Image (cartoon, helix red, strand yellow):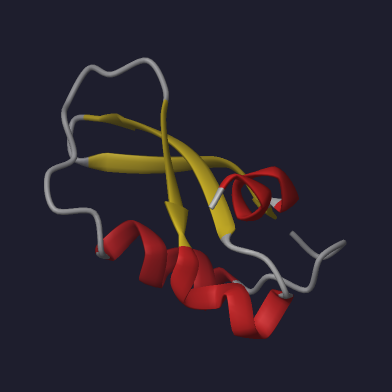
Amino acid sequence: MALYGISATDVAKVVEGIPDLTDGAERSEVINHGFAGKFGYPLKVVYSKEHSRVTVITAYPVKRELKRQ
């Protein structure tokens, strides 16, 4: 995350904003457009959840998603 200047607080805000984290999902991802002003692109967070514990796998600004809009 240091490569893109993404802080743990930024990632926590994205993960907390997920309405329903499903247990047992192998891997899930969310794209948050709220950070487009800070990073220039939406922020994508890939995570997994087991037993109410969320593990962030990766987080990065995603350029491709912005082009699709």
